[in-house]
Length: 509
Image 1 (cartoon, rainbow, N blue to C red):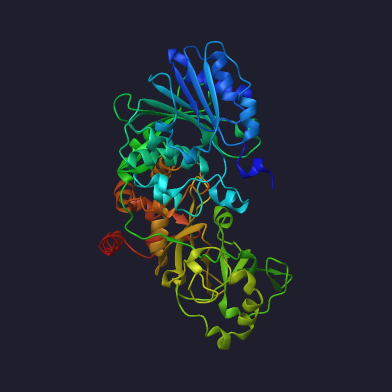
Image 2 (cartoon, rainbow, N blue to C red; image 1 turned 180 degrees about the vertical axis):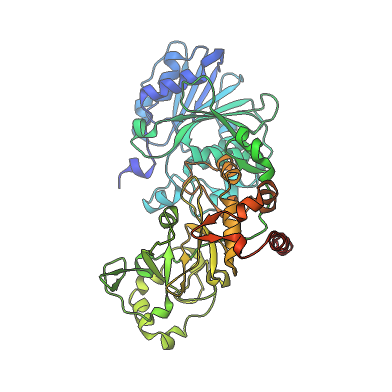
């Protein structure tokens, strides 16, 4: 595997570096000192030397010798340029560098766009040391995660080490990393005064299909603020939206959020994530010409008592009243943690099949399977088998809520890309679904979610919807008399029953 891939090496094109420097030094802003902590071939340094008036000193750090040699070729009669071969995770950047001036500092660059898990798979060594991060809450949580962006660790190292200095940090990174950094700043009450995110076309510049931008953050330069002005492009003069926080929770569009903030709260019902098994080719089956097959195309002969219709995010996105499930899922337990050894006698064909795929099932990577009964799954419980569910896909915006019940006498289950509320009565599910599909809820969800997130809709997002607040704002009589899928709520209950049920939900919560 190439060193370039191991290091997450996306060299910044010269023109993009110039655009970034133009953006930062616009409107008369200037810095005498510039640090590029992962300078590569030095394109940001070159752009600063060429067009950043007032810069007097630049230090560039780089781990790869070949890039160090290229960066050292940059010459300037007015700017002192120093290039050092150095792993930034081995030093304290605030105390180890030798500057000739103490003026405000600009930290500029493009840290690696790679996760620690991917780098580990490629035998990469350029990883942060957890001991660097023990003094601020949240850093251990990040560096202790099974997967995190190296750029995220770089950001947090910089913020940690320069927390007491007047500094501006401006790095190219994924937009998801920018949001995590903003959350970290809030959670740790860091002296942040201004944050801006300027989107770039990552596909154009780096040939990668991710959402990214220049994220700029100021420390110790005025009144504290954790709002982030978001620009559609580097050279745009006005921002298009502002994201920030309310009660510690992230909000994607603060202006839009203020119009629907009354819906913010705690859901009176508990959202559940769907079934998790981490072995789709083994556990998820399809019927082809009447024959049950797994993801490898093999014919599977098992006891069908342990087979349930399954919905995934893409199914919920387009579900209708007459849908037919595309897939079925093997269910080995009715509750997480339940023993499975009895399947050997009660379902011998199923046990034989699962045992034949033990190489996939017994060595699933997630730690949740460690010390769990053999062939375990998670996201399963009594709620999975209640007759009615309100479901939503995690991957798609705008969120669309739907009611599902049974298919050919079997409860329909959802996978772990989806979320559900479960009910015993159909009218309960229909009522809650109608509330959730109300335009006010759509606006609320749009204001707190980010379309570029890998999974915009999560359990934590759904738990923020205060159903009582929605109920108090809508025309409930109109809602109850609206017919969907040939079902009218008012045929099964009246307004008084609904009021009582909502109070029961609140008491239960």
